[in-house]
Image 1: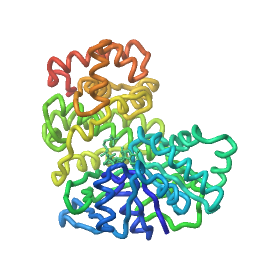
Image 2: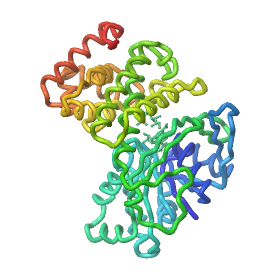
Image 3: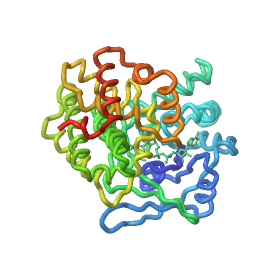
Image 4: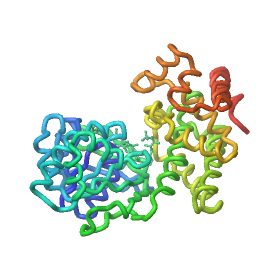
Length: 390
Ligand SMILES: NC(=O)c1ccc[n+]([C@@H]2O[C@H](COP(=O)([O-])OP(=O)(O)OC[C@H]3O[C@@H](n4cnc5c(N)ncnc54)[C@H](O)[C@@H]3O)[C@@H](O)[C@H]2O)c1
Ligand SMILES: O=P(O)(O)OC[C@@H](O)[C@@H](O)[C@H](O)[C@H](O)CO
């Protein structure tokens, strides 16, 4: 069985490629990083270091790789023949892989009628549907209908802290022992293939993806943006400060109220989920850079994203969202000049002021909320400790 995976980064190697290989797939990675492509091809393997107490290292083989910028024709051939296609390129890059995918799918509908699932594993609600829409923009309506006779775009939720280590010889992923990969069974096109090892198939994805994005990723972003204000360099060092840990617990408890109202979960389940998530974040075997976790703040501060969406939902339910308001305001101060989105956000604030920036990037229109976000922003800039809520 052949798998084609776009994005040979942290999660591509440490989770998707890892479990596709365990399921029996020969994995071909597609990336734009030539050094990584060369290392996969030279070694026909890569390494995964699991951050358990034994620091288990596994060799994942056989694997190969292609560079989509210089080997588009080879990528198209792989699309024609793959049994499954997966991605983890970052949700903003799905539009960049859509051209080669659409060309490959157009060729496939003529040559290979086998059903094919294309699963986008990105931290976003319904990323596979987003990828499908990007492909739809590039083909004629009749062609899309034909593509959809064989291709499914099942949405998924994916959770595992995954980092990488630079090495001259090998590609090395570093991952925490725990993981969750949830796939929407109802959207699968191919029912003949074995279930992917490590994945859970569900009929209703929304509670899983929302729990992942609005608790794990929301809490992560809150830790990064508040940690930044304390000049902390990692998530782990930030959470060693009792006031930050207390804040992160508070913001997670706040979003938990949304889940209790909207999804069929108990208070006990949410309490345990939050407890486990904070233990994962604090794992002293991991050193997770604030700037990795806070990356792309424009994406993270968006209307339907991890911070603003739960805040809007809580506000609609007339429930408090004071912690979220502080985390969002901190996101507007977060400044990583190496990050294109962060630099653009800070430029926008300098040019138009923070109130305009909050309106523009969060899409929030409620004046009461906008005022509280603006007030928090100035208070946090002046003295972060005075704002963290007890
Ligand atoms: N790292 C984690 O802990 C983690 C966990 C769960 C989900 N995710 C999600 O997985 C996705 C990837 O995250 P990551 O941490 O692995 O990032 P990463 O930066 O380590 O990996 C992304 C990879 O995609 C490649 N890429 C970018 N544009 C491409 C293109 N046009 N064509 C082919 N390859 C391209 C990059 O070169 C890189 O190797 C993101 O959506 C992220 O939110 C990450
Ligand atoms: O990947 P992002 O930028 O959406 O979010 C950064 C981290 O929160 C994220 O990568 C987590 O480590 C991961 O989602 C854990 O499963």
